[in-house]
Every structure is written in C-alpha cells, then in structure tokens.
Image (cartoon, rainbow, N blue to C red; front, top):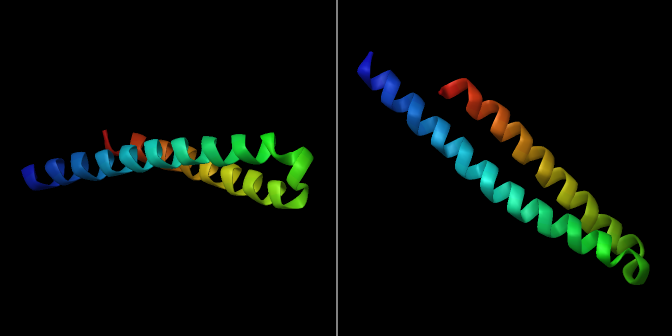
Length: 69
C-alpha cells in the first residue's frame, strides 16, 4: 500500500513537470508563429499549429496529473 502511494506521487510530479515544459515551449512556438504570420505566411501557421498542439498536450498532462494527488 505504501509503495502505491509513493509511486502515485512520483507519477503526478512527472505529469506536472511535463505540463510546465509543454506549456512553456507551446507558448513560445505559438507566440513566434503568431508574430511571424505577416512575413512567413504558411510556415508561420505551422509554428502556430505546433505551439497549439503543445499547449493542448500541456492541458492534457495537467488534467491527468489531477488524478494522482
């Protein structure tokens, strides 16, 4: 029983670490893509889509981490 509780906390902290990383990188990609739309065109849209996908992954990781509290 004790082992399961410790493992649960470790898994939850892994999800939080992934949430922070994906959130920061997602914001950077999305901001860069949005700021370059005028000059790069469709290439900037790709950066924006990557950023939005990473932000989605950050939200999914955060919601998953809530299970392991």
